[in-house]
Length: 580
Image (tube, rainbow, N blue to C red; front, side):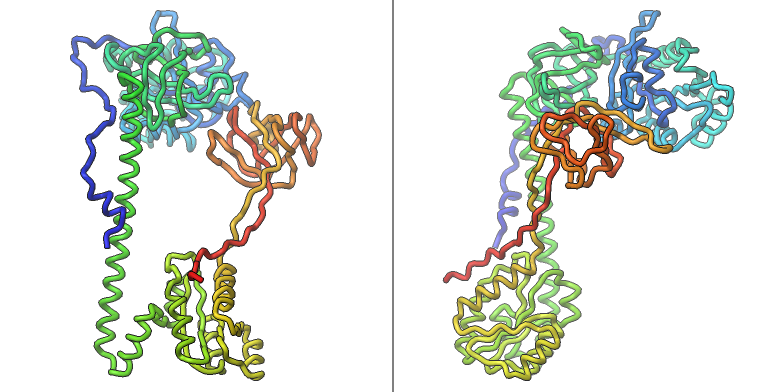
């Protein structure tokens, strides 16, 4: 019998409807473009302060706790007239996602290392990311204005990671700066421009748009919003874009200062409004000719994903079939060595699909099963019960194993067998003597006696259901939206805190909570603190504002949802229907 997955796999492959990047452009149409530079380095080494000084804005001051909580793309205009697009990365997840998709958007990495701190864990990670992406590095030794700074020590430490500055015979430019005071920043900018000129960065400004998603968010006023870097073509209002499994008709475009834009060419960071759903950071953006074509592309990508899953399912099925074939081969070999009486007994049990299993094998292979012994008054009764049990679906969560069946009253041997297999005994129109019942009670073995067959089966269904793990039902008590994100210092640690407003119900300090973002659950657990104004409170009601922290350090984002809930255990039921 062929499975439906196999049938799907055998279907004629559909024509590829995906959108892909255009072939490389004619060098004659290429024009110089601005470099895209990623600022990387260890936490608190001054990455955001450096950008703040370059852009003459107060990004660092506006960020809660002074720690970057998003990925920002900014276009900086230098006094020389040159332009540089900077990416500020709090972590390396999006950078890794782009590299994994073979679409590195970064041209140059500025590695920021504090002169008073030296090479740290995230410094090493940043170096590795740059090397994996084959991106050149410029070293910015920050905080050189501090008395305890030692920029030469930093350069020597970096030698161990194959980052060799020009002073030591390498190719890495090294600039000593003070991001806070603005010292030597123009030298850093000039070094960046000089390196970009050596790289001869050019792009095609014509034809369909190609780009990369840098960050995504849901804005209450704008809807799904992405920040993107354009790599090819020129983006304008009305363009139809696809990215991942989402598409957009560009409704509005904004720059990093939230000012409307009419067009965005290569190396330009742009905020795009008009997505039907949020794509993912690192997704490739491609322009298509129409909305119909966009839907066609998404249908194709979903089809490919489904086919991939079907193929994986088919591989699992084939592996199981091979495993079963090997098992049956061993059984046949064992069967051929049996005596005539042993063969007859084995055939009888096999026809009933009720092969016995040794205790050791059971405990190793059956995580959730119910071993039972069936005793009946006559052979016909036992056979009728076995035929009903034969209809039990082997795919149910709890396996049913008949370890023994026979005719006559329940005996001490039945109790011993049930104890060995940790099972129970069902009797139909039979008895169990007082001694047998006492023995069963002493050994913790259940004896189930019935005179009506459907009641015996109902009892068996209850026992199977009791073996199942109960489902956990979540009853939502309250919901709150994150309106602000900041950090508070507790001891030496900086703890993420969310400023929230309760939208529905109540938040109870001792209940369970979960943090969701774009419909995805990021965390479940308990609150570390719940405050209204400056007071610790047990409950915050609808319409009230509060500050809260979690029992795990997770960075919040604006628009995140905090859900308060209680769990209720619901016992699962076996879906088996014997047909009476």
